[in-house]
Amino acid sequence: MRKLLLLIALLFATPALAQERPLSPYVAGAQPATASATGTTAAITATLPGRAGMLTYLCGFSVRSAATSGVTGNVQVTGTIVGTMNFTHTTSVLTAGPGATDQVFTPCIPASAIATNIVIITPAPGSGGVVSATVWGFRLPGAFPF
Image (cartoon, rainbow, N blue to C red; front, side):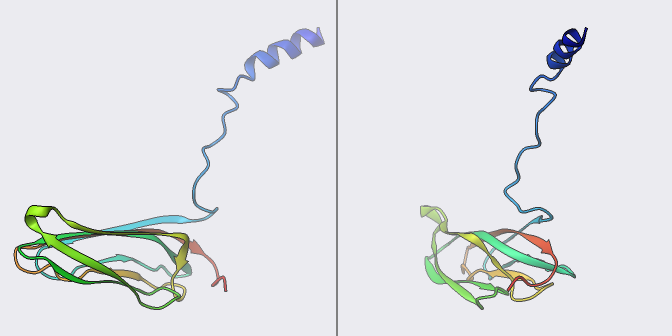
């Protein structure tokens, strides 16, 4: 009788009933965060907002821009532990498609302090321009890790 009960129990312990939750790319307790902004002729900002009692981490950003004439400027990243970071970005001519600057940080870069915003500032594309910026990262509760 015990063998029969064991066999029945094994039949019901199929992989479908024993599936585990998929692994997250974030550490336990992390809150994913994203921000995006668009504009025309002027510079724009995309901000990962800080939260009380939480440390914000920057994992990457993407900037695209095009205008009537090409220009070059810096994408600035402020609020990180390493201070202001600059990345050269070229706004391309409209007929050539948008200029692109993409950065992925591994490991992700922490903010300079708890509850601090991390801000991406694009250069102004100029006349006839279009610009977009997207930033992504996460926040963790607790004290500053360093």
